[in-house]
Length: 122
Image (cartoon, rainbow, N blue to C red; front, side, top):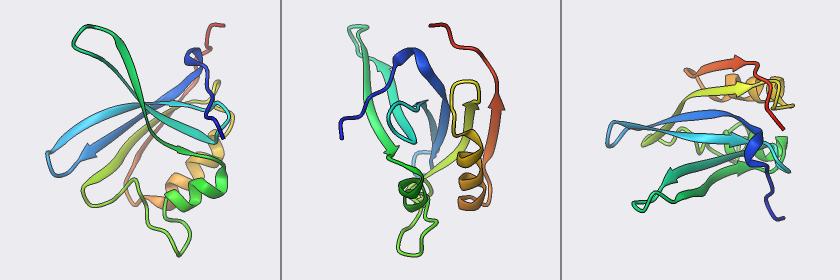
């Protein structure tokens, strides 16, 4: 499956904490043709815009596996060295907000979840 998304349809941010280096970093969230896509957006030294796919959930079942909500899997977003600490979701852009929030509440003992509503320009 080729991952597809629209750059003008960013649906939120995810803030991760690296427990080894005690640093945080932010990833952009997109829906596209997946349940959720995590992308690291950054600028190169020459000021060129760059991006890297960090992770994605193909569908809700895959999200459950990645979040450790199935007995054969552990949470890849809470590894002991890296932890998802906060997620911001634009419910006007992301159509699966309630499903995602439900999964996150089950997967984490402590996580900050912010829901907001902002229209996205075409």
